[in-house]
Picture 1 (cartoon, helix red, strand yellow):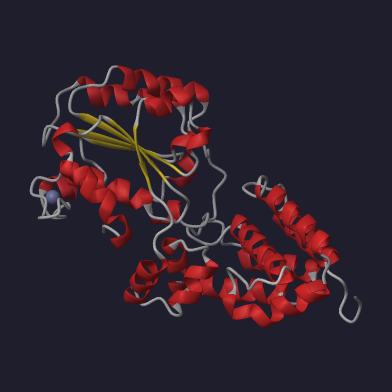
Picture 2 (cartoon, rainbow, N blue to C red):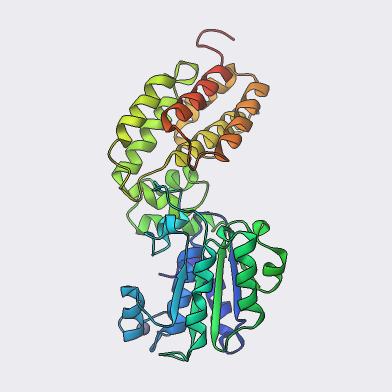
Length: 351
Ligand SMILES: [Zn+2]
């Protein structure tokens, strides 16, 4: 699926197909759909009978092999921890629940590309390697990858996908032709969400910071109910029951560790951070940016709060995001986070 907000990038690549650079770097914020785009473009390069806009047909042998995960001229290099997410959708949205597997791309994965590029192509005459997220390569691994780029095998295209190009080796970045993916136009994104049958597409898009793939997760009743529940807890302000919420969260997740796609702790930290952003915005006289549906409650909490306390808590939430992938104890982590939130706000009735 080529998202309507990616048509420009798609047309640009297709128009330059005969002199396509062998190393492409797609960068853009999480949830914009760049990983899906990379997969679509890879498919289109290998498809035997692409459509009028260059899109993969989905039915030729090449397309079927990719679908089945065994195309001899295609490789997808992802960290083990996200290997179950082959379509790119989950990798692009808010983090999914993770098994404790490596979140790094291992050097062996890069070395294994040697087999791919040392023999002739099997099919269309092209080979494609998608690496995502490229920042999951540590400097050692990135150097091994760089060697491949320095002596590119003929007809081989490397597509790197990143949400954070600054974390890539400068030497790696400089070898690639860069293509940027920004936040889509809100009107276009809302129209697309409505087409997908997402309830309240406008509110969903705002809550997702303008990123349509994250907003599309509102279609999942479990995700939506978690969102409503957690935001409902934050709406209690200083009266939030940190211990009770943390216990409820733990109970909710018990036995769900194997369920891919369930919202992870980092998702809740992002929601808290956005909620605090809205409190600050309301305290400064602006309206909410993310939670338009909760304007009244946000304004009420904000009007009684000290701006310095809100900023302090917001900065703490940012610090939490650096360690939320694998906390030692998710329940204590949540308890600590919400206690800090409660302490930053004045108790009901006081000023
Ligand atoms: Zn095809």
